Image (cartoon, rainbow, N blue to C red):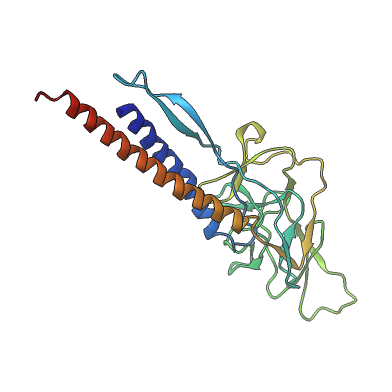
Length: 256
């Protein structure tokens, strides 16, 4: 009976990771541009170690692959808000200075004059440098990602100045993974030395004056959590039943 309890306990420990992932997605259901992860697969593996050669236990294959399925668009009419179309991702500078990607498009001008998103990550241009905005400028962002600046006292007949083009990549032909800092990165087989990747066949476009909501389906997530809860109760009950059966068997062999 110890094998039955061992398998049930291993399943509880592994499914905990799935519950943590689902809780994280529910917590970010209102986060701009948040992307859910693909479900991790559970497989059966042979336990290793002395005395465990006959044990088979469930194991979660951790992929952490991100689903870039587009969420709903929400019009804001804010010139600094952008929503990335299809599976386009935007290049930003992570806190550690490396190149990373995101779908969060609630942009703002930081205290240093650098264009940032709502998480405080500097938005990068096509040449890999942060986009710096002249002080007091009024910005306009086109569908192609071009950022134009105009001085507040500049005559309307004068053309705006191009200060940079947002780095955008089409990730429809590759798989992206979630980094520990919640930003995205291509899997190593698709990545270049600096963390960039070759853009896919679909033209990169954005929607100015709009934001993309999370692609997490709240109803589906809640149903999964209920299923996890019932599965946990079933496995705990299995462990208790295994203990009761073991005790019953031991009592039958006890000398009278």
